[in-house]
Length: 417
Image (cartoon, rainbow, N blue to C red):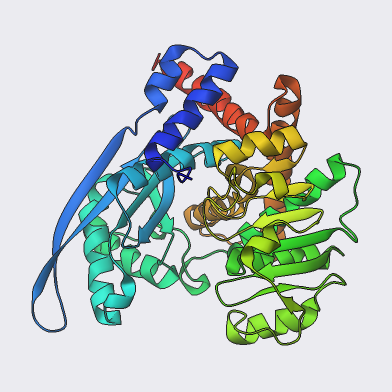
């Protein structure tokens, strides 16, 4: 069977077109949104530890800034392409807009594997990339953040490089920074917290209590772990989780206190320490649970396995874990799918809070940040749910439609069409 994948940019364009059509939007709206406003390709030299010079190529795509500055991550991964960053910047526009934060979408990256370079080389590469894209970024213009294989240290190097070009302190030009360098409290937990929060809201819509609800979490990195952590805190029963090392199932509920201790000590779960029986990732997806949280890779739920999914609610911690073909099957089955652009938008929401705190030079407590995230995501969820109900569409279409409503109004007010 052919894989249900297209060029990622073509998928993004299809999703935008579908939502525009359902809204009966002015044709000019899709015409403007179908392509990024700007895509910069840069090339810059870096001297490696052995004395040789290597040229690196990087990209920064800026999709739409009708509602505010561009926002989105920078990734270092061998599979990065210009079309991928164009697609990701498009999705970021809608992720920001569905959450109701005043940003447009941006994304960037380089086709490298950080493991191939020493720490000193990675610092020079990061600073070289930041300097190369500096003409089109800025605190009020485009605010990059960490993404695949980048982190707070890399953002700190990039701030340093940018500030040398700018000649002034501008910590707010990058978010996802360490706490000691202008980062925000509650940023580490933000995405997983939001993934669980939206699932809890969906359960309430189905007249189900999160207390005692069963969860299966695929992918147990930062996002999956905190999804399970907050579900557990709310009284849910985690009966399965998996990562690249293990996949574990316990129908009576996994001992989450032991798992949390293991994760905090080792940074990941490496072995099954009697938490339950070993299963496969594929089996985890098909378990009979109240909530399934795919927090690993894209294209996990396809037309091949969608008929066998038994969860009542799917909350997407990963980007693109469900194919369009699978979406249709799940919608017909009555399974609620909370789309990635809503479910995992907690990360960009708290990145926005970090930026606001940087601009003010005034920082909030952990509790304040989470309360603000809760309020923003709760409003976004209610708006999307209401629109889905009004148009009789799934939540993914409704999320895109809500975003396009907001963006199109801003573009109209600016006189773009």
